[in-house]
Length: 193
Image 1 (cartoon, rainbow, N blue to C red):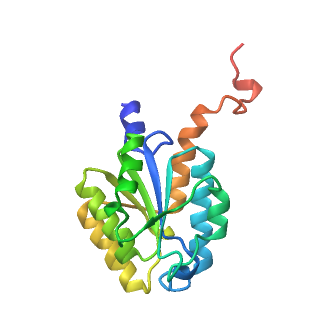
Image 2 (cartoon, helix red, strand yellow):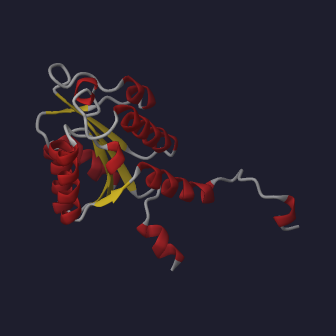
Image 3 (tube, one colour):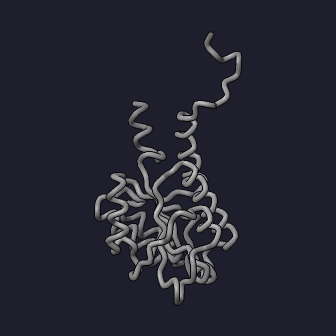
């Protein structure tokens, strides 16, 4: 029973993070969530995923034109990775993204990104149709307005996506990590002789 519970939740060994189009100019268009809150959540998620060595894909669109470069803090966290420059609104239509995900062998996708109604929603819907379990981190997604954000999230939920908050994902991933850490402090009174 305990094994089934662990298999159902997100662990550092069963998921892939896809960060969609977190670019400087796109961030300036977001009004569905406060930009500082959004970026704090994204950076928190990125840091923990990086520390746990969870496979992560970064994407961009129109980096040299309308989208601008990746957020500098995000590029610092993933300094050894370049974003995959996509040419369509859905990253799932880019063969490089699909190949990278397939290469991991993992079937759980954690998605976050800008322009929830186009880039995140279309990517999530296509991944679900391809047989992946998709977790959408709603407080690390942003859109042009609140209505667009809410409608996109509802559409993804109706298709089978699981909405989660950044903190939920962090706790779930760290909870598993605590069992793996050999240097976890155990009080003397609880140690076996």
